[in-house]
Every structure is written in structure tokens, then in C-alpha cells.
Length: 455
Image (cartoon, rainbow, N blue to C red; front, top):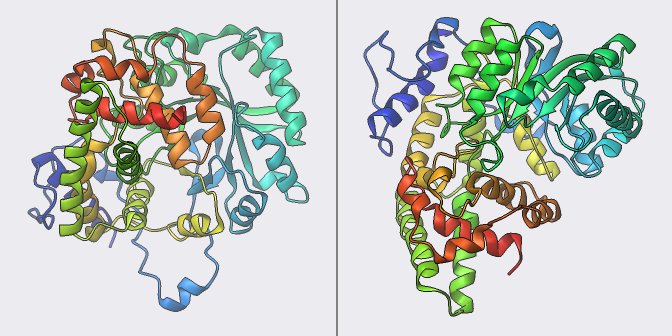
């Protein structure tokens, strides 16, 4: 059974590489391995595939079915971790179901106090609590110490299992003397057990050509980081695989975020329809950018109907299983706004990527792959004559539309220094010509601007 667990995953990767996604995924010769970024995974194998749940099982509350040792920390974490969660009841339900890995951050509005309330009365030693601090503001030793102590106070806990340096945009920032001095002091005090680093893309105006993989590979070599949190999904593997392999060699814990790049199509489609219904007079270049986006979206709609991909939840579940089935990943962060979303995530715990999942994701990639601006990419940004931070803007739009963090996303967008996406309505589309994935990004930026400013 062990050999068969990766068959669906292999076939999806092979079909995507050959450009034949959208039809039944072809079977390869027994024992053959596709030439792909994942070719070195198979020697490690996967745990046995979990059988499909019966109708009766669907009625029972879902629970975590698998725990994995988080690198050299030695801590056994649930294969699903809580990401950004804003509801007290939803958060408590996930912990009751066996989730024991919590990801939060200093910059998450109200998150620390919510977590502190939910943790009361629970066995703290059984929970791996990870938080993050950005290298901004007071980055002296004293500054980081003050901020970390405030986080502990808000969380009403004595220690962090891991504190991460969040979004170091340059390789040089990883050395942040103030951060490391503060972490060493907190380790001595028993306030921090491990140190980590998280990354999902640089603000290119501040750090041109400092890609996620380049920064994280440097973090692996640094030796002081024991856990990594990174963006990775079935549409965006190329920047992550080398990091995962390097981290595994150093026994660094690997956690994932942004694993379900599904939903952009539906959100952007509704935004375009809204703009068209309003019938506003707009610059011809603006209309052309939206038209290019709409053309690809319309073709995606035809494909989605043809292959019965109209249920985005099915695609999300397959995407999550894709990440969970990676043999070198320890936990995957999932944000849930409702009990239904939390249950949907929990039911995937311990599951494995199947042949059917491979076909589903291959078809989705064919239909909608060009409608996803890859997290942590930024390839197009150096071609923008106005310096628009494309990847950062699309990340904020993701916060708004996919995570329900509307106010935070709008504030972050308003604080972007220099050019924002309103500049994109007067441009022939340099970013689109530079995009290797064919993303109609100009139209997406224009629609994101309207949403993030509620224009």
C-alpha cells in the first residue's frame, strides 16, 4: 500500500508537466518516476492511504488522525495547525478535536488575546504555540524583548514553543542581531524554546530579487532557525522544493501556509461583473486590462462546467490533501472562519492524495491556473515602470477575499508607499508580458484596487 500512496500525486505532477491536464491523468509505467521538482520525494514513501469515510463517519465529529515530529524540536504536532482564526468557539473546537499546533503573530489583530482565552484550563505542555515578529520598528535587543513579553502577556502564557522572525525581506535581515540576542535571552529564561523564520514574499521595492526561496535557503544555512513556515501549494511548487529538501537535511521543522490557491476565480469574476454593471466611464487601458482577465475567466468557466469542477470545496480539499501527503512536511496551517470550514479541514487529517485528486487538480490547473498570482513570486515586478508591488497587493487581496481580514487588508493597502494599483489603469500591461504563468495580472490588480479601497 505504501507504494500506491503517491500514485495520484505523481500522476498529477506528471500531467501538469506535460501540459495535458484536463483529461484523465495518464498512468505511467510501473516504477517510473516523472521528471519533476518532486522526483526525490518518492524514496521516503508515505504512510498508508486512509479509506474513504462512510456516511456514518461523516456524522461523527472529525478529529485529528495523524501527528508528526516537527524536525529537531522533537515535538509531535498535529498534521493540521490553526492559522489565523477569529472566532472563540471555532478555535476551541479545533483544539478539542486534537489540533495541538497554533500559528499566530504579533501583527494578527486580537489573535493573541483570543488564543489566551481559549488556552485557559488546557494542558499547555501538549500544545505547540508559534508566534511571529517582523523586523520593523524597534529592532534592538530591548525592542524585541519588550515586544515578545507583551505577546506573552496578551496570550497569558509563560512561554512560546517557537518565535519566528517574520518576513525578513533580505538575506542580510536574517542576521538581525537584536532579534537573535533577544531570543537567546528568552531561551535562557525559558520563555522561548525554539526559533524559526516565516516567509511568503518580499516587498520588492525594499528588497528587489530577494525571493522567498533565496531567503529561506540562507536561513537553513544560518543554523539558528529550527522551524520554517512557507508558502507552498499544487500551483506553486518550484520555489519551495529546494527549501524543503535543504531543511530536511538539517532536521528543520517545516510548516506550510497558502496551500489552497482556490477561489480567486470566483471572487474576481464577481468583482468584474460588479464593475460592468456599474457602467462607469473608465480609461481604455483599464478596460482592456479587465477584458483580458475576463477572457481567461470566461474560458475557465467553460472548462469548469465541462469537467464538473463547479464545487470549489472539492478542489480545496484535494489541494489540502496534496500538501498533507508531502512526506517531508510536518504540519499545514488552516484558517477557519466557521465551524463548517473547521470541520472540512479536520476531515482531511491523516488523508492522502489520490488518483482522483490528481485528476481534479490537474483539471483545475488547466482551467484556472492562469488566474492565480503565485504567492512569493514577484517575477513581473522588475518590469513595472511605476514600481507597483504586484505580489504584495495580491497578498492583501487574498487576506480580504479568502481570509475575511477586510479591515486589516484595506489598512495595509492604504499604507503602501509609492505607487499602488490605481496606476495600472494607465499602463499597457508590462507585468502581464513578464509573467511566466500567463496571469492576466493587470486586470486582477485593478479589481483588487477597487475592492481594497471599496471604490
